[in-house]
Image 1 (cartoon, rainbow, N blue to C red):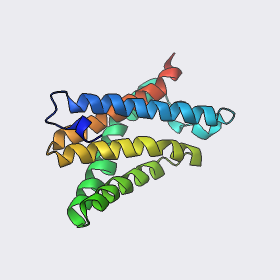
Image 2: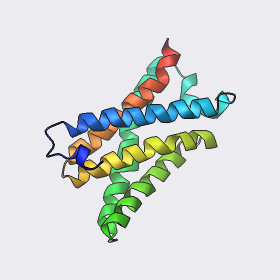
Image 3: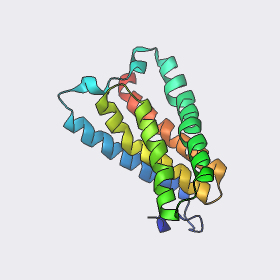
Image 4: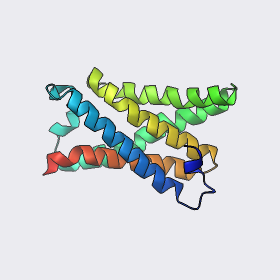
Length: 160
């Protein structure tokens, strides 16, 4: 999978990250919605009770920017600079810890936290990958845009 996203590749790695990440997150959402079909209350998000403007501003724009900064940028940069583990172990720790923290922060229900694990790992991996390749701005904004798209897709059924 690393060869697929290399920056030397003539294709655009950010576009592939967004496409593959969105597909993985959508498949995750589909599987979990089928598993918990009889329990939609597990996936209730308190932001859905707010006006649409509030949902878009905080759920689609500001929330992803803040969460990307706090859960990926700060933690991954800190851990990557602090730890001196073998490369493979460091990769798993630097991706795993922020992913678990991100999922834990979405404490609406245990099922919601479970549903957030796959997106959390996709976000952490994307940030780690682009940062490792020396593209700090790509790391932040690629993850941020994917997070925004995920949140917008989750809110779209409420708008129509």
